[in-house]
Length: 106
Image (tube, rainbow, N blue to C red; front, side, top):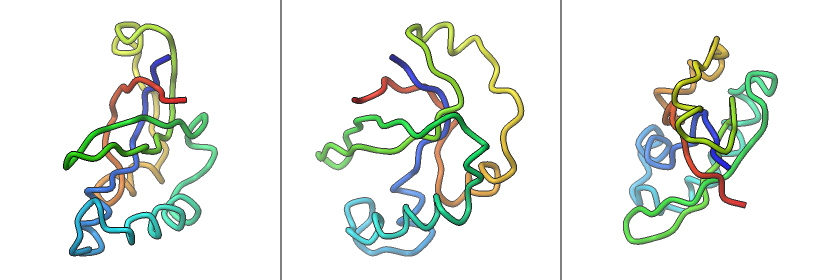
């Protein structure tokens, strides 16, 4: 299954809050939940998905705000996103990457 949407970006969060340990700084995790709870409109996406990424030699399970999903990457690439919720647009420069398509990690 593939998911399309916006990934919560450990890199952007570490940069936004000037965390010295970068993406591996444990404080990044402390910022993720408040960002989701206070910045994002829960009705602005279908569900939370997860993807497995590798960065700095480490594997990370990262959260994606899923706008669409399907079994064909090509079909998802051809589909438009539609209107993007204002809360996602506001969080994009500080805490989100995308839009993108990732293989869902279960």
